[in-house]
Image 1: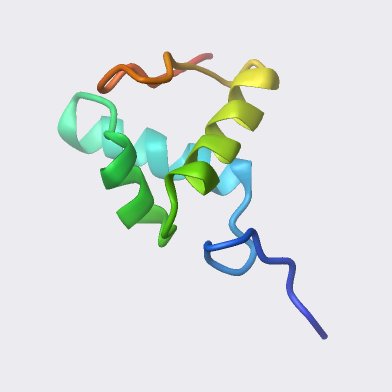
Image 2 (image 1 turned 30 degrees about the vertical axis):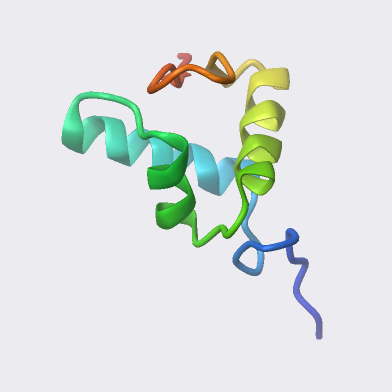
Length: 77
């Protein structure tokens, strides 16, 4: 049985799992993760994979963020 894999990411990494990682990071540190920190948390090896998940979450209205700016990820209620 094969598992769905995002290129350069953990097997089964989904935008929903990414949202959980972001929420936990913010709860622990009080600020949002940088892209490199998010990549490390999620086991991603490319910024494009991280951006893919962030864009999917943004499109779904789950987060806001500004590409190219540091620590702008905000989880929406």
